[in-house]
Image (cartoon, rainbow, N blue to C red):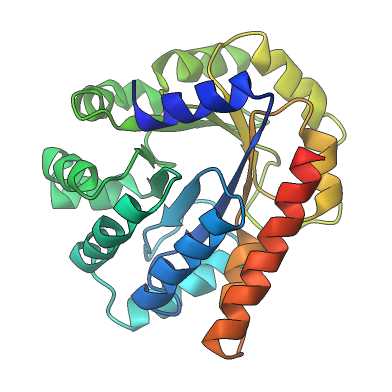
Length: 265
């Protein structure tokens, strides 16, 4: 079984849910990326998502867009990101997945990217700009390397297409909570729980909800219908704060610990 399959099997056996924080690779620098990953796992994160900076982000809001711009302006390179993750992932008890544009994978070379991701100890890929109709080739390459290919369902995805996405995804299905871009929100859509409930009836894959989740109240609301919750902009914003490194780590760690407590409570 792939690492993510193992994770969710263990969580389900213990009646627990996953908290999956997102951070941008190289913002503010790669040393911070490694340090925050270790802090997140120490604070109870079940899995971590690392964004590979891209000049044309697909659905990212201003906080994550700005983090990508900062990292790219500093000259961040894919090889350096993978090297840092390769040094860090083996030290962690939680899987790491990358959020990466297919343009980056294609330019790097599909097999080469997957080889290097697997060699770095990564558990999977989230590729937001890869249409489900074009995903079988990448899925086959990932499958040979025990990498999960996680695909996204949105509130506007037609149900017939959502079923196809579930059939071709591995690891888990990423359910996008809102139609729009990433970012912290005060409230979530009223039909979110109903939509996720329908999707749960269609697949045995775990379902993780992302976009807009930032508060313990959101976690408590969604925990009954989700297998995991993804939190991004609130983490990235705290990492970008103009404070000493140790304070930043403590702030991010305390924030994630509060969400883990809400999830487990």
